[in-house]
Picture 1 (cartoon, rainbow, N blue to C red):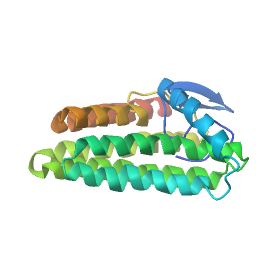
Picture 2 (cartoon, rainbow, N blue to C red):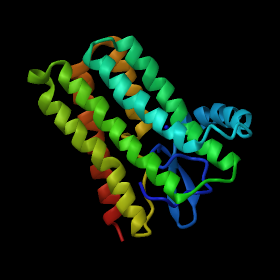
Picture 3 (cartoon, rainbow, N blue to C red):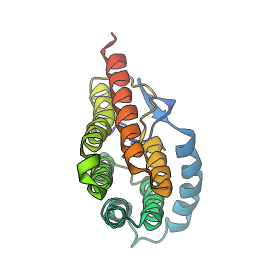
Picture 4 (tube, one colour):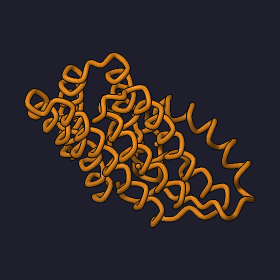
Length: 214
């Protein structure tokens, strides 16, 4: 379920972060939810490891298509149950691609970059779809949610690029995904966007303050 590549041997996806894991001189956040999902996807990867026509990059693209385009389409159509189904499926695939790459000893910086970029597109498409449900009312909180969602991984990526540790935050990707699922199931789109805007911008400011400490 993905900023810069310093984690070719790490079992975590670079965008999913809540708890902390030591990786070289950089602290890489990793949440309980991530560990629970990886316990499932690692088993799936062990099954797929010898099916060579299925590649990690194919799974990454499939995850992005289902989680961004397909789920986003169903959100705009206000079919929230199907949107939730594809968001969950996309999240599982998002973890599976990295686990399969590691199972085949194919983990690479290029794969991490692809995964990260696809995740950013998924984030954008989901929030854009939420705004389009009722753009007159949802535009401002939606744009603020987009801003915060972009800044959370960006501040982390810049911190790691400078060789600094990052810090666990309430705005992790797994947290955002859970909130989106709850918001869709309860059909509370405006409160969802307001909450996303609040926690992501608080998280990005929190990480920025932490990163600026010498």
